[in-house]
Length: 146
Image 1 (cartoon, one colour):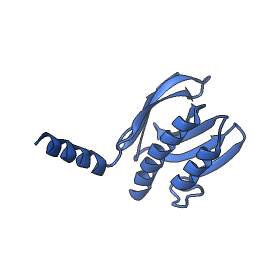
Image 2 (cartoon, one colour):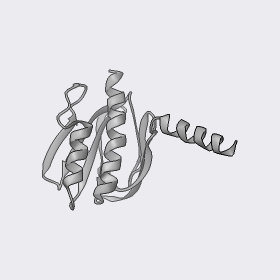
Image 3 (tube, one colour):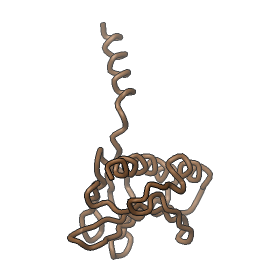
Image 4 (spheres, one colour):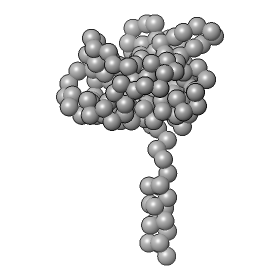
């Protein structure tokens, strides 16, 4: 009976889609980069930024860009356009080959009618890759509703 319950619980857990996670990062919101905690939820991203609280959902989301080592930029999503340049698989492949450096995610959103940008930086490529999976899933959901 116990084995059956464990097997049922395991099967249920494996069939449930990932709901995101919480990540330690370095963030900036019109200020210097400081440690922060970002949570990718079922339908939003939120976190304690250095000068404000970040909350992005499908209603205020505008764009997500990825910057690698301060210089190169690759759009994951350009506004409400549905064309993906890297896509989740391409981004994960890129991060898998990257051994050192930084990866910045720029969340662009509307707040009180103004366009805002919050930066989430990772120096650990493994964590950056996990965040990419969650962020890509969420962006796909945002796009599906547009």
